[in-house]
Structure formats: C-alpha cells, structure tokens
Amino acid sequence: METIRIALLGAGTVGRALVELLPQHQARFEGLDLKVELAKVLVRDANKSRPGIPGRILSHQVEGFLHDVDVLVEVAGGTTQAGEVVLEALEAGIPVVSANKALLAERWEELRTYAEEGQLYYEASVMAGTPVLGALQSLWGNQTLELNGIVNGTCSYIIRRMEEGRAYAEAFEEAGALGYLEADPNLDVGGIDAAHKLTVLARLTVDPGLPWEQVRARTRGISHLTPQMLAEAHAEGQAVRLVASLYPENGAWVATVRTVKLPLNHALVTMGSGRNALVYQGDPIGELVFAGAGAGGGVTASAVLSDLYKVFLGTPGHLPIPAALPMPKTEVERLEEV
Ligand code: NAP
Ligand code: HSE
Image 1 (cartoon, protein in one colour):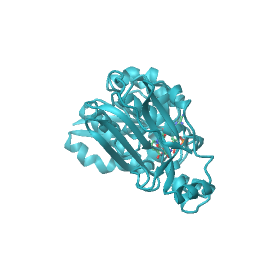
Image 2: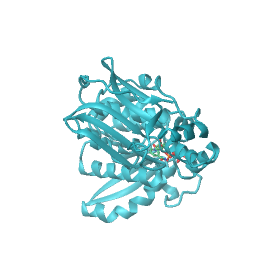
Image 3: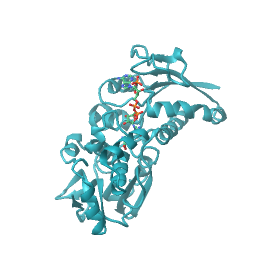
Image 4: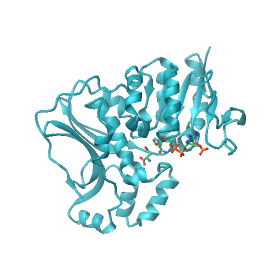
C-alpha cells in the first residue's frame, strides 16, 4: 500500500472541515491501495488548540514544511506568504490543491505554467463545493457567448437577509457565523472576492492570460445598497444582486462585477440566500445553469477533497483554456446597473 503524505497550510474554517472529512474517507483510500496521512499542518499560531490535529504535526515555521510530503493543500488565503509556499511546492514538483482565488487571480503570471502542466487543482476556489471549473473545461467545444454569476456567498446572503428586513450589520454578522467571510471581509462586500473568482472563470473559458487589473478596474461592491433600494426594485418586479459577468463588447471581452437589477424569476434570483449560481451561454450548447452552496467550511472542504482524489489518481488539475477564444459575432444585452 502506498502512503501519501499531505501538507496542510491553514487550519481555519476550511482546513478544520477538511481535517474532519479525511478520516471518513480512509476506507475509500484503502480501496485505492492508499494510506493517506495528514503529515504536517502549518498555521500562524501553533499553540492554539486544534481538535483532530495532533500537536506534533502542527507548526508555524515554513522552513522544512514541504520536506518529505507528496501534496500541498493550501487553505490559508492571501497572496503573499501562501503564494511563496505554493510556488515553492510547485517548483519542487509537489502538486498543489488550493481554495485561494485571490492568489490565483493576482499571481497568475507565476502560477500559469504550473496550471498548464496540470499541477494546480482549484475547484474549491470558485463556488466552493459546487463544481463549475471542471464543468467549464468540459465546455471548450463551444463558443462561449456570455457568463453571469452570483459567486460571492456573503453578498448573496446579506442582500437576501436585507430583503427580508434585516439590517446590513446584522446580516453581515450572520454571514460571519456561517463561515462565509474572507479573513478581510472588505474583499467580500467590496466585490473583490467575486472579481477574483470571475478572473479564474474567464481564464478557463475565454482568455488564459486575462489580466487581473482589467477585472479589478471594473469591480464595485454592495456597500451603497439600502433596504429602500431593494424594496423599490421588488415593487418593480425586480431584485438587486451582485453579479459577476463576462461578455463581449466592441471586439473585446469585458469582465465586470457590480450590482444589477434582475427579474424576480431569473435563475440567479430564485436559488436561495447564501447560495451561488452561474448562468453560461454558449454555442451550440445554449444556456446552462449551475447552482449550489458557494461558501462555508464543509462544502468547500468537499471540493478540496475531491481534488485530492484527482491528485491520488494522477488526473491533471484545472487547465486554463489553451488559447484565447475568438470573439463571438453577436453582442449581448447589458444588465441594468444599480
Ligand atoms: P480562515 O478561517 O481565516 O483560516 C485561515 C487559516 O490559515 C488559519 O488557520 C490561519 O492560521 C492560517 N494562515 C493564514 N495565514 C497564514 C500564514 N501566513 N502562515 C501560516 N498559516 C496561515 O480562512 P478560511 O475561511 O478557511 O479560508 C481559507 C481559504 O479558502 C481562503 O483562500 C479563502 O478565500 C478560501 N475559501 C474559503 C471559503 C469559505 O467559505 N470559508 C470558501 C471557498 C474558498 P491561524 O489559525 O493560526 O490564524
Ligand atoms: N468569502 C467567500 C464568499 C467564501 O462569501 O463567497 C467562498 O469563496
């Protein structure tokens, strides 16, 4: 039986949930003739009590962390220290499973070659446990026409709760208790987290080199929304949502995040608070709708674990589209911004 040694970077909301899930899969791993061992866990504070993680494998020291391990799981977040560890692993030929869309969006130039080689697995980075990245790779046989998504669970949850009469601050706290918030929640409510995810989606579907700065420049959040604005939209038969969109305009792809009005029966409106959804339009496939849980420890850890299965089986990670897609001939109707 082969032993696979996992190095886990981060034991917060997602890391803890993964540590809980792993033992439940041991019998399945054994069925694959594998013994999967949580070998090392790197955190900021190694003195904090961490149920399920023996103290002897916990450390706050990066030095030696990647020595004698077979796969790195990065669920720490951020673009600096996490980035250095991820790059060190990839340079050493260690495959990486990551949920960190900020890192993928902002340090893509350093990561891209490894992603193209299939060494990077990142299903959990967009829509958490709802598997869209693998599905989008399976749509390369189409001409992508347009993509619109609710890809931030925090904003999805806050707006829905405000529609139900909750104050913004109360809804924000509830989202925190559910494990939805980024370590810096300004990334959520400022639309940046959704922009990170849109950048990842765009590189899988239309342009492998889409620059992060281009998406960042067309990103707005939800802080300007008031209960009154939401109520007025409802009275007109519409709902306000933070939507990440990718569409052609004047011969170039536009990737933008902003609040828009949508009809109450739109797929992006009917799917429930905190959840995520993505509506893809392609030719010849037509419209596809993906919806499901988009944030939270357990659902995200499930995607990390599914990626680990791919690593164990030798299946390549998530590949960006091999070359920029030709522009579609038709343009799309613009959503009304709020
Ligand atoms: P979190 O609860 O804030 O946990 C972060 C963990 O990483 C903590 O254990 C922290 O250590 C450790 N850490 C942070 N910086 C570190 C550093 N420089 N060196 C060593 N350890 C470090 O975050 P999370 O919610 O689990 O999210 C983790 C990642 O998953 C992020 O990239 C996030 O965007 C992504 N993600 C999260 C969700 C979600 O719903 N939460 C969903 C999809 C993707 P301490 O415990 O010592 O502070
Ligand atoms: N903070 C993120 C969200 C976590 O609210 O969607 C999932 O990526």
